[in-house]
Length: 494
Length: 118
Image 1 (cartoon, each protein chain N blue to C red):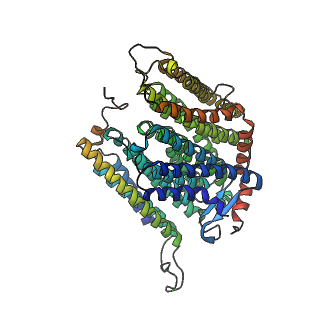
Image 2 (cartoon, rainbow over the protein chains, first blue to last red):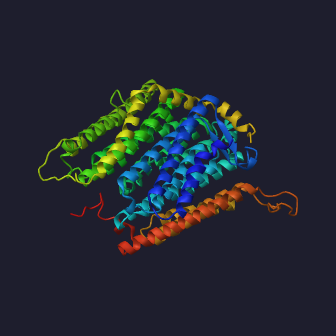
Image 3 (cartoon, rainbow over the protein chains, first blue to last red):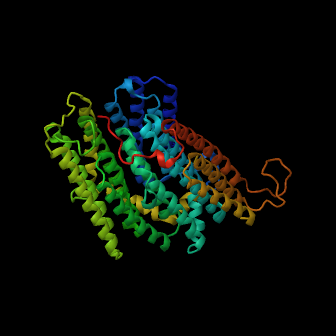
């Protein structure tokens, strides 16, 4: 079925078309905005279609699934595609609101769309080598965007980003080679089938641990996260929101997919996941506590994906449901916070907390949105962060991982402290010598886009039934390995 | 994996890691080139020992062929690696032009957030 390829092809083709349409202008923006809007509509339809009629398999070129490049859209992929489409649409519109068309770099939109094509390819692919290719497309696109409008201070920080990720890619290639050597195939369904007979073999554990290094690096997990906190703050806020929402989540998605579906549960890997998750949470939040500029703090709070890793380590359908629900929450919440921060930068002229003040009088609505969204990230009860963390920690207590639960709660408490600190200094504090740039009207437009997106993000917590139902369905299919094997072996319908 | 191929891949990985840990951009770059070669050799070794097998060409000599799939994978990996490595060269050159040094440890000073113009 062709519909599996559309989420990849649509942004890629739009991006390529925009490369040749060199002059930025209103018509070009309309085309790009309309394209992302159509992709969003398609992604929402796809979620409905997949949850109702079951997953879709497509093998490129009509090969049999064992040899061809297989694309599978199952409930988890559809969910990730929808999240990717909604943040892309919001970030593109936010970019229009933030930057006058005269100052737009002609390559920003094409590269952004090619980057999204890469992330979408990672979400639909059902082949380990193709996943490597998707990672490389994402890496090339994101590095190009990172350096596109960078000055000499910012361009330096693209180097650790590119270097670390390229190192990870080389390791991924070796892991793919190991998988091919062990199983003679790279297709997820075939790998899952043949890995069943090898369960408990140390070579399988070695492969799983090597993949853990690769995905952990891409997801920004503890010992390998240091490329992240200095590179993301150099981005303009619309791109920062997109990166925060999507890029490290590609690694997280790969973790869920590979340890849920492809490889059988392995106690060594699960223990490693739990240790890494705890270390990531506490190191990330302590780093954020020590920083005084909002973008830097938010970039380090991306390490809260540790909650998802923890849930993957706990295993079981309940934990995976919690992981996927928390993934939805985290994508939307981080993008919303970066967007609100975009409005804050425009209004205050800086996001350095030592120099921000007086924002509450100028923009009370922005302050309320920030506070609600930050409370949601910290895990206050009516919001989405709470439900996700609650489910994960309940599973942790059932498993008897008390220390880890305490670390996670401490992290949430410190996140709350950070949120209140930002709120107190940037919004609540009044200082006579701090002047706001009220005459620059752009902040209102940016705040409007950010506000709309924040309301969407908050609704995930206030109306948790629908996201939870989607997460349950996704987790059930991800963990049902025999079903996935049977599905993957089925000959593709043309 | 044949023993000599395994040793070669391991040796290349070792050299690559040694070069990564140097302070000069040029050496780090060579580290990346070597790393790509090491990974490619690891993939190539997965098609097994080539003893007496023909090359995987349709209409060739006939008889047993080596497994063509790893070679297809390497081809893709080489193309991607070339692209990313050339981007890395340009990025390093840009940093060299800005900072007038190829020493990594001197490049990232001062640490911390971007200094603001007053």
